[in-house]
Image 1 (spheres, rainbow, N blue to C red):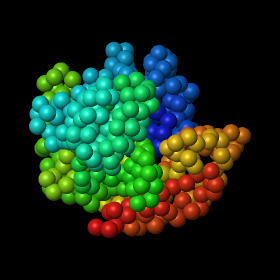
Image 2 (spheres, helix red, strand yellow):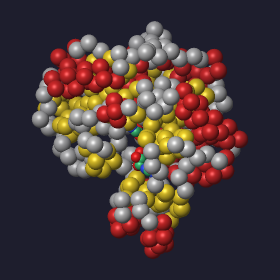
Image 3 (spheres, protein in one colour):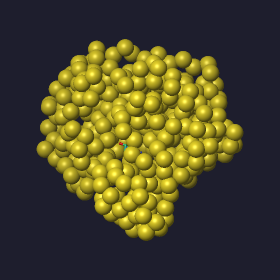
Image 4 (cartoon, rainbow, N blue to C red):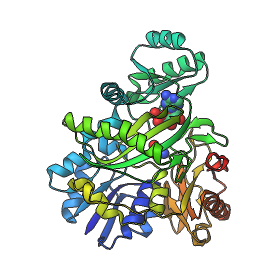
Length: 422
Ligand code: AMP
Ligand code: GLY
């Protein structure tokens, strides 16, 4: 089969890496891809939001199956366009992707079906928002309603910071995504990322994972798209997975079907786990980045039939097998990320790093220029390692990180610390 993966991040590199390994794959393309993806797939220079360009490419190359990585084209209806053209694709329709595209929609759905989540209120007016923040007190969470690349939530430790954040978001810091804000009760506990494939009806949980959202060691500094992840997540024992499926994921998939918005794709629940069990922080309608990198590293089964069964409504026939090994990914980002950073610094040493046993270096924002590898984004590399347990995977991942020669980049040195403390 001929496959097109849409996207250009570490998540898409990991998907391409797994799909390239499938005996079903004949030709593999990625639009637009990155320098690492170009080593295993043919990259085509089409923007994920250029739906006409993607459709035209699928027709001219007779693509059999499209896998859409990022949320923006899903929320904007790329899979609907492909569907209408008779091209099979992995990912939800726009009607399903609203679970990520609108926090307000998801919050209403949670209220309707009784999914445990933080209490919230919506505001478009700063004065009303400020009054609510004063009344609630801190800590409190202020979020842009729309898509903001994982950076649209501010966890404020005091009332002044919360009001300032509300003013900045309503003032346009995240563009139209912040025309409306959501103010949420602060949930304490430990975060986990939960993934399940859903074909509109049936649901199949994937391996568990945890991410590190903050930019700095010890979970300090601003939120990012994710600075590192590992799988399995010790906090997600069998009972917690069971509770998450029965209290959160299954009711959501049922409710979406009843609303005429069947969700087909990977449902990614950001969870807060505390003594009362799992609480939903937010839904995403796609794989996590960098969680996808560790899931693909641990997946023993062929990924492609599972993705196709998800699209075909045949998930009940799928059973995925996972390696007993743990996996960890350490993200290397350009100095300055998630604030402003420079592009174009040179990266060396990836060859020897990738030759360490169990290590794969996934690329995110990279570019090849005259044979030199250059940084071309905020998050640039996902150094991924497998090992008998989290400790072993971590030792290998940092051994590889230390071989990579990139003065223009940095990483957190404490990925996995929370899991190892347990
Ligand atoms: P979101 O954009 O909703 O994914 O939020 C980004 C991050 O902010 C989450 O991963 C949490 O670390 C934190 N966060 C969001 N909402 C809450 C909440 N209600 N209570 C505590 N932390 C939260
Ligand atoms: N790593 C979190 C996300 O992909 O949103």
